[in-house]
Length: 310
Image (tube, rainbow, N blue to C red; front, side, top):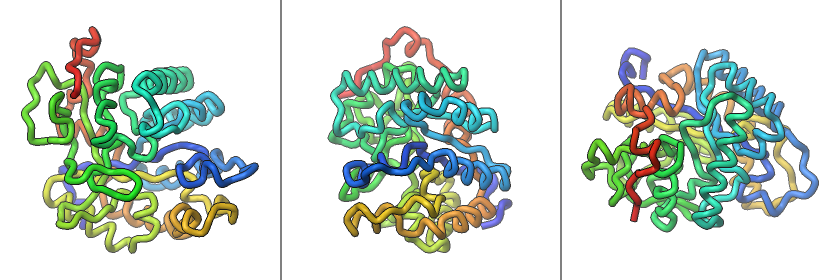
């Protein structure tokens, strides 16, 4: 697809900024890891700079506290900074009170590094599912204005079967139904799901493992199909996935296959996608899809009177 064909659709590209050894499949299997976060981030920043693309970095709060200068550098280069939780624990392992604390602490850490409180959040392991939909209630009462944690197809680890595939206002009563009407005074939270194709069955083209093992032609076809339907593709990656020095032999074979396959080829694939399609930050994609004022702070949110989600 040419840039001309893609006119009017703003896809998003984002990076979950965490220590590579805190990934779900690796966290309990790696002993005495080497920290690669700075060099991995620089690889990604150089890639984005070459293509003049602004992205979103969802940052773990502990990383923002450990490397405030790095987060400030990303922010100063024009990229959006969102929250990836405080400790990189998935929602499956948190209570509502712990989730609320993770949101507040990570937001505070990011604000201390950048001077701005983040607009958006993405939970580790795409752990906002039907099982944990109570998380929407906490988000609606927080200072965050959008979430990007819903993976709209079921996988062995996460996902929402039949979930919406385009950005939408979250309905207080039906948080996974993008067709449900949302009154103006209920518009306290936007969801920007990860990219899967509008086919049956759905095919994940969001990024991460799926991008590392899929041919770039498949990824391009999926994004093109979404864009022709007027749907932005929301892609995600991790900076460590671009660093060939990250793979180690400690985890069991299947964990190494899922975690490290295709790392040596990912940068080239993303180069080709950035050349072929228009990308921006997640917040820019939401504003393009739902209107320029979609993420403005509503009075109801300021007073913490947002509707509760059942």
